[in-house]
View 1 (tube, rainbow, N blue to C red):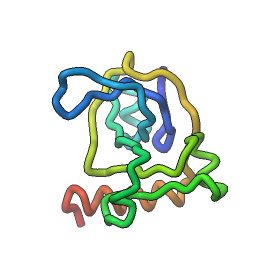
View 2: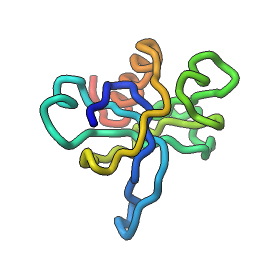
View 3: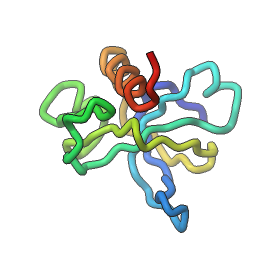
View 4: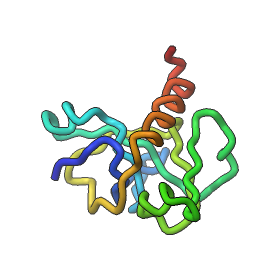
Length: 118
């Protein structure tokens, strides 16, 4: 199954301890060129824990907005560009939504902050 950058996908995401994983939404952040060429995909974790919603390395997605509804998420959530993972293709379940180009530009800004890129 191949994905596009900006897809919101349910995936089996590892816990930080790597002891196990849980099925949770993630955002595909890897470029489409590599999404087509390799079987690993770089993703950002999505969480309903809103405590870091105002942090520059996080993007708040609100369900009450049009873009929030297009994400396919059931609750207000935060994309955390501090919690990235590379997942094998077999770790993905289904696409539930997609973020607009405008939101992906904001994700790019969050990634720049998180990774100290200029």
